[in-house]
Image 1 (cartoon, rainbow, N blue to C red):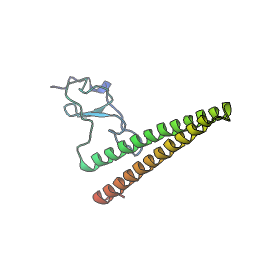
Image 2 (spheres, one colour):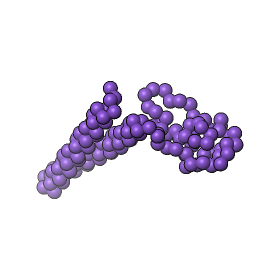
Image 3 (tube, rainbow, N blue to C red):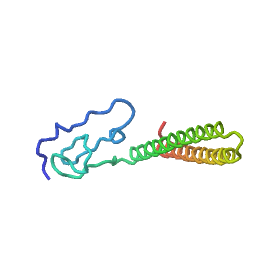
Image 4 (tube, rainbow, N blue to C red):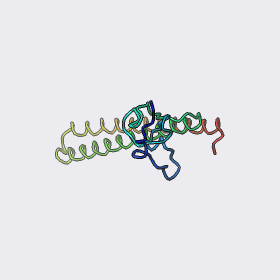
Length: 142
């Protein structure tokens, strides 16, 4: 495992803003001692396994929190789209069959599902906020 000098082709620039390198998908090669933009597990220059997580405890915690927040936000957007499309379908059914009870029952069932999804999302957001505040206190973040 020796650096072959191919690193400059893949070298990643430091991201602008608050986010760290690992949050932006950059990986670090310990042999070549650089951050690179690469989709594989191994360095394209030396073949060494790339590091995808920071070594420091505080930065590892920050990365974990940001990944969890992104995951919850993604689920929230998916659920929001699902709720909206379900309501649109119910609205169309009620317009097509205004006198049928089945359409009204379907609307009630979908509304119950949407309300349960909203409560799940709210609980996940509360858990993440609690974790963020406890980690800030633990490590003295401002």
